[in-house]
Image (cartoon, rainbow, N blue to C red; front, top):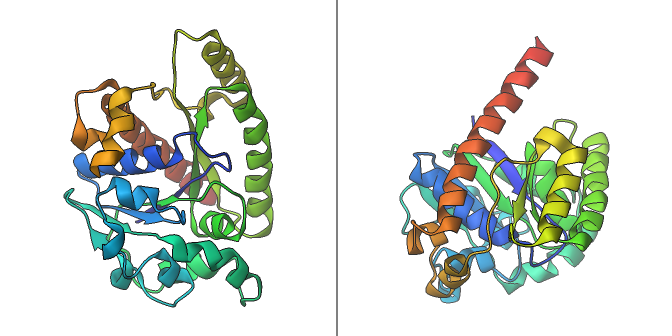
Length: 265
């Protein structure tokens, strides 16, 4: 069964795309067939996977606005078992176009059910907003993964995001779950980091991943070379953290599926 996970945070600069790219690469590296759907008009996930803008002839815009299928929009990356549906600036008009479309919240879900998906994991890199494009991702996904920067304002944004996810769950996607929250840009020398971590773990408990993603220069350098950090420098602290996070995500997803099966029984 293909597991579809939306990587979401309405706040920019929290490591969302870095998480999407490196988590997908890590999943592929440990044998999982993986697809990234880039839903950010900036196309940073596409760039980080080495897809030049000139090569983005068919994009995620065509997937759920233009009626194309996954097989018509996906592109192979240089990483074995990892494909991407790239994005470009065309997607910036999708919010307006979706307003008057029939089934506007279901467009991506419909596109992903047109054909059998040949992947173990589909990761959706959402834009830094909670508009109709992100709503489409939350309706199409089975679960949500939230990168959370270790700073005070991130906590305020998290509260709003959790309310939005619960609303989508009640109204449009009753099977949607929060798979995990991962703390990013983690600096154990900073007292605020420890304060934010303690607050989040005390409120959300097991939903917060044990793995944290440290601040790391090599991870910041990697996108300028069109490579995930795991490919650019697999031995750096950030790359090793994402490999651990991939294994933790798989465990969490297996637990989530088992719990649903028991509830259904």
